[in-house]
Image (cartoon, rainbow, N blue to C red; front, side, top):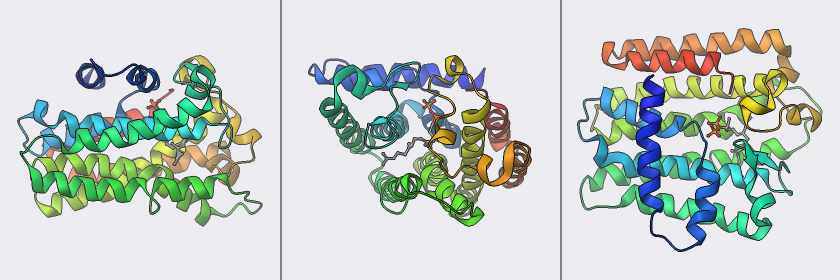
Length: 283
Ligand code: GRG
């Protein structure tokens, strides 16, 4: 219910940000449709749990996270990367519009994200901190590094390398999505720091369930092609720990995240529910 309600708010805001643009906005918007909106919802949840009352005022920051995430999915699907023709339940961007436009759609989303993140004269220091935090998590110390490791061939099933991939490809961005809301609400530094460490565990959990769903998920509910990681010989939690081992470790990461969220008090209870959602998700 919470997720459905917040997803509707994010979807409405995204529509507004893409209304009245030039025709290329439609190409970018195509790939934005159908996502779960986890990252903006995490930002809104932490903003509200941290006492923020102007949710409409931080929608640019929240939605910017979805734009960055979607850019990374478009580029990940390209023939030179994961080469997947199916994403979010429909043809991926390069399949629908051709490779050149897909690359540009990703570039456009990435740049437009920072326009949305910084729009307006209010909360300038907080926005500056969000820009610094998010760009660090999605650049060469985060997602880009995770993707570089991900496309390498890993003959050795090394748990340390697996953790490094999960941390950089997925967890840092999830953690800073949570932090972004708290920064915008001017939460205390200790709260922002605790949210980061809880978010890292939640993010690793997120990638564990992604790896598990690649093995046991269904194409229709996932909206992407299952079994691809295994076929491509990717270093996944399943290859390192097996299905039961990966499930066991996913539960452990969920418990580690929840322990930290609980420390923040009842206002943050929604994060325990979100952690359980991620643990039990089927899409
Ligand atoms: C191209 C620089 C660059 C990076 C690509 C996003 C990515 C890195 C790879 C895609 C594959 C993958 C497993 C990424 C980890 C993050 C992740 C689990 C993405 C899927 O996110 P969801 O489940 O997707 O939130 P929706 O479609 O619901 O938004």
